Image 1 (cartoon, rainbow, N blue to C red):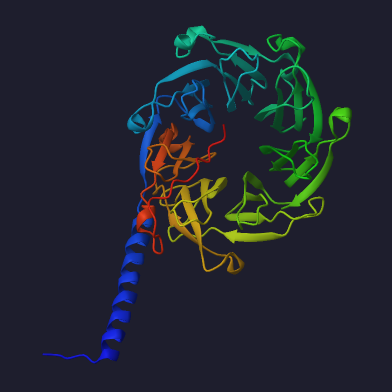
Image 2: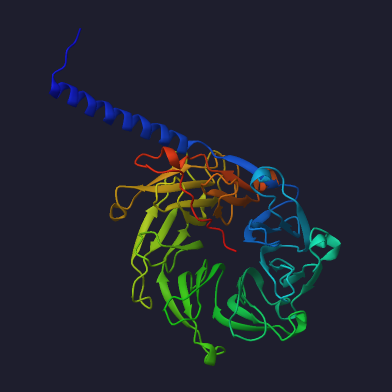
Length: 436
């Protein structure tokens, strides 16, 4: 029989605790490395291109609108709630939209029914408003929707992205717009007194662009109005920039351009989040071929922002940078990053997530698998708790798998915040990060 002295017992306990912690950490890490289960919302058309969120029926659940580029249609998906979220969602085709690149929710005519704005490139080269039926029980009937092209946008440019935004303080909600190719721009559509009169919307150019990928409205300079943050993917002006709102009195005047960074780089989608917990929202951008650029907000936003470059590296390889979203994936109280790709041909990964070890000053980020090898061209990302289990799931779409795409779907977060090393309380309930 082995006998232990007091010191030996203490030593053994310390070793046991250390080994237990290592084993637990290994188990958690292994759980995080699992491919996340994919739940298909819809895969019945071709080329799902982007997911945007809104609450169309005021039930507190995030609904989705998506344009199907190759399918030439735009749809709305009504969230069935946590219990039914893993099945197919009820949907309505709100209009025919060949070469659609983006669709976004907004009640433009303020009648209580949430409309959809679509942006189309290709031969269509116009933006349309899909007017929702006012009666709630008609919302899921395609024949109850009315689609009209906005006259000022017809054959103007290849429209890529739209953001509803009150700009001039008059009439209804205006629409911030971005495009690509010849005559590309960041501009805005000024709402007329009667938003239903599509011939009366006026287009104003703010910035000559190459290929706009992202548009965010944010008060950067702290003067009380919304400025514009954008990523320009191609051309002489490519990079991350912001346009300074000149104020209501001079709203039709010049919006001064300020460079945040990544000039000369092919910058894709961006997100805005407080990565370092200093109370300031930073800008995080996906940059081709395989980088994340983290621009730290400072008190001097007119000057280039301090940059940290995060390399995305996974043992099987990833595709080229595309989408990005920040949120607490594993429930440890720190901000993680989810990153999507295009050109993610097998066995490359199309969606991964990253967390950091040590401190942010070390800038040591670890890349984890999320999607597995299925899927080639992914798009925008949203993070929100779709199944009600208290962690953030990942919503996205994919448009090239087997020449059709995986459709609109979400990945179920397998991480259990209760099991995270150092977690002493109950399950963490993160705030949904969806954009409404």
